[in-house]
Amino acid sequence: MSEHRFAPGDVALTLVEGVDWPAMSEVVLYHFIPKGDRCRDSTGYEFTADSDLWIVRREGDPIGDRFSPHHLMPLRGDGYVPLTKANEVPA
Image 1 (tube, rainbow, N blue to C red):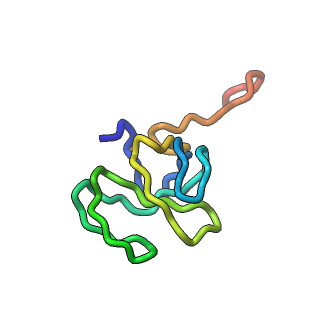
Image 2 (cartoon, one colour):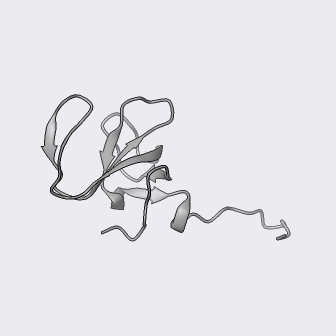
């Protein structure tokens, strides 16, 4: 189980390479697949998830890829910490 509680629509960075994407690609989480579920990918290939997976998409890319939750770093939600400049005064 991932230490992050992702939800569909969350933004994350990939920590490993995807099929056609480099590591550190910004993606949007689309659909969660629990371990053991049978699924069909965008090419029609049918598979059984051997671990929990997230279907993710890059902006402007109609084809998604699948990643384990531990290969994703959240950019929003419970793991997101907005960056502030050192001289910025908090409101």
